[in-house]
Length: 136
Image (cartoon, rainbow, N blue to C red; front, side):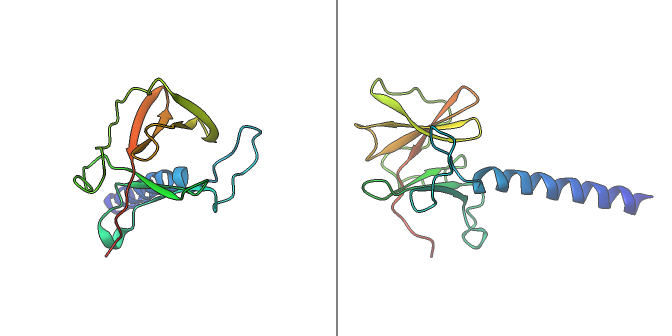
């Protein structure tokens, strides 16, 4: 009986991990609901071999290509122009980009874009700083 319970717990935990990964691996959509090509916008979890799986990278290749990072554990402190903020306020000049991932929306401030973008999730605003590093 203990083995079955343990197997069930492991299976449920694996399912939760897959749910987190799939949230960010989905294709973003534009304002008309069409999939946005990955060559324009994509997100992915940080690589395990770097120990970055708590981070999410957002690759925005419209205009000047930029990478932003959701960094709740502070893995990249000192490697971004501003820190990640999971309780940010939208700048006055921020506008909805039209890009969404389910209920998650990407907002961009022209003044802040060189340093950060804003991701609105369930009425919570997160500031994702620009990341310019690389995984060793």
